[in-house]
Amino acid sequence: ETGVTQTPRHLVMGMTNKKSLKCEQHLGHNAMYWYKQSAKKPLELMFVYNFKEQTENNSVPSRFSPECPNSSHLFLHLHTLQPEDSALYLCASSPERGSPLHFGNGTRLTVT
Amino acid sequence: DQQVKQNSPSLSVQEGRISILNCDYTNSMFDYFLWYKKYPAEGPTFLISISSIKDKNEDGRFTVFLNKSAKHLSLHIVPSQPGDSAVYFCAASWIGTHAGKSTFGDGTTLTVKP
Image 1 (tube, chains in turn orange, yellow):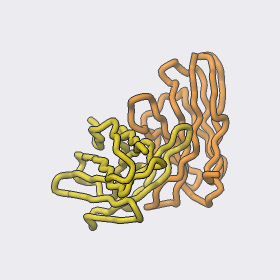
Image 2 (tube, helix red, strand yellow):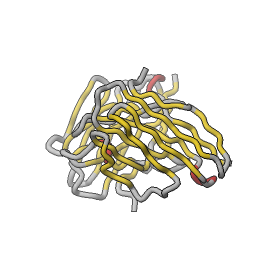
Image 3 (cartoon, helix red, strand yellow):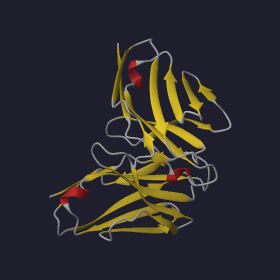
Image 4 (cartoon, helix red, strand yellow):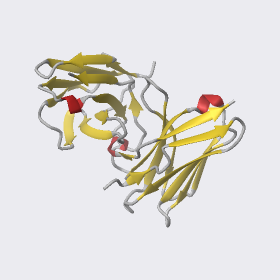
């Protein structure tokens, strides 16, 4: 139990599908994040939410749409993705400032 | 332009010996550095951190050294154990900002042989 739970663990979707990734944290943290890890590349920050408000969008294409209904839950809505979007998507949380990230185990996404 | 670099994609050491993982950064504004460890099919987990006011931080078998003038940090694991086999990520950020805004390196895969 990592304290940060991501579902599903694996997802295969076609380019015309719509799907959502879910993240839930039980650590009482105020900040939540989406990261993307592609093969042979470093972790890339996608979105930051602080107290449910989006504070950062790292030039992510609009086919990725985040949602943070409360401080414990974070979603990433996916639509009309491209094969190059296939990657490991990691959710993380942290206290508001200064402390390290707590990651979930990720969702392995394959776009066909 | 990659601001945090781990130039060794992989490292193999014998059990009981020292493992040294290296990380270089280019942005002199970074003042907080972290190491994460990642096992297959799991998310990264925090290992150890250091702020720029220190040059060394130790936690059990793990020690991180920071050389600000060289913009270089290293993680020492002594003694290395087979359970330490994992991917190690170096990350850098600014104190006072979200740790989640860290910039990550590519990672180094450590293999500890029994």
